[in-house]
View 1: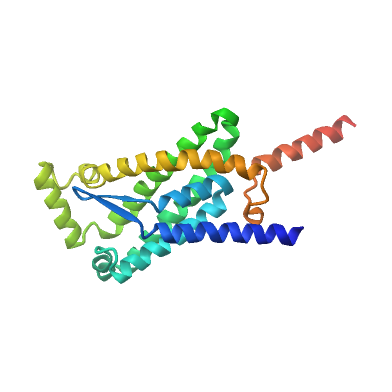
View 2: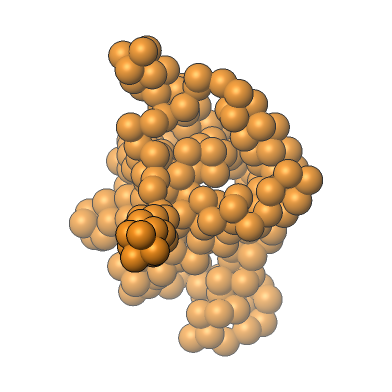
Length: 237
């Protein structure tokens, strides 16, 4: 029985890893410099269903796919950033994605406890929004932290500043005009795809052997409550 559970767990994790890799190469340019990417979809769903540890693993896969795309030139900015700061590129690819997966899974773990049954769509909606906001904020923190002084990045800032008539020293406006529209687009895509998928799959998993038990997250608050109940039970005796 335990062996079957382990096989189910490994198979399920492998399936989500495969989906994350496949989705990393799916992008839909829609004009105006905007591109719809779907790689956050399996990461968000995996983190929601199975918790922060699985979310972190899928985030690591996401980071690996991003690094490969950057090093190979699949992402045209990758070789430029690699020449400027290889260490910064590695950190920017991995740390934001791993933290994103972990924090999204952690938030989802507690959100599912707060919003159950018919209210679960609230938990899934918040999770869908959270992964996009975290991805954008964490990625930009590393991106600007390591590469702000790179000539190519400065050129991009000056180009946007000239186009939209703002001070190039105002990074908030650079972020809004450079990344805001794409973030809103990804928010819409994630809400449409992730939210119903999370609710449906979570209900399915409740009556299914498909799970990732060996990476299941256990809340430290549960252990504390259990210990307090045991102590109260002992005292009452």
